[in-house]
Length: 204
Image 1 (cartoon, rainbow, N blue to C red):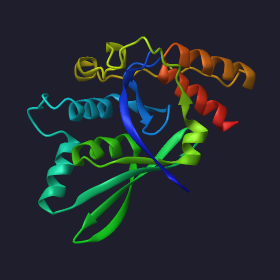
Image 2 (cartoon, rainbow, N blue to C red):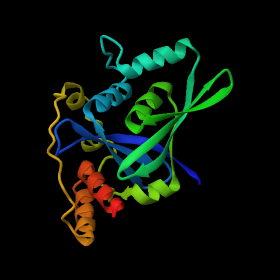
Image 3 (tube, one colour):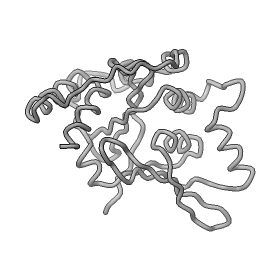
Image 4 (cartoon, one colour):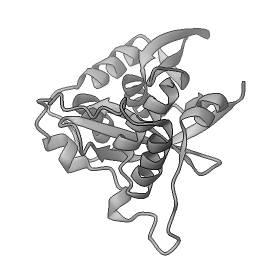
């Protein structure tokens, strides 16, 4: 199976669930996006790693892992999102110490937060992108660095971390209705909703 490299496009705040975010990964040599729903803490950690000027007063959990790894000369070489089951992405950290390579299982949100700190590339398999990737219709008249595409740093850092269990339920919808809803969510750039609808379609 061939690997596809991904970049972080941005983080979008969930419009349907407090404290949840959609991490948008972008196919490097293509137009597909891979939205992954993550928690507020992980979103905050990723946002801080992306925004170099923000320095927390004490190390966050992922910063502590990086400091620990540096002390014992452990390097994360790459992150691979290797499996998708019932809407849940599974990832592996490819680590190296003394020229010996080890593979460590990790949540995708944690893996990406660590990849940023180690400046490690992020990959997924083509079949996962074929299954879960979505195409976004891009307006050529819009500036690529328009505010809507930027990572919502301030919102994430200042967001109240209390969560609300107000999940949308798509089980009652037909497959045709779900596909129409997915298309509309992509048009509206509601990536978190699109990810949930996509996961429901994948389950069927």
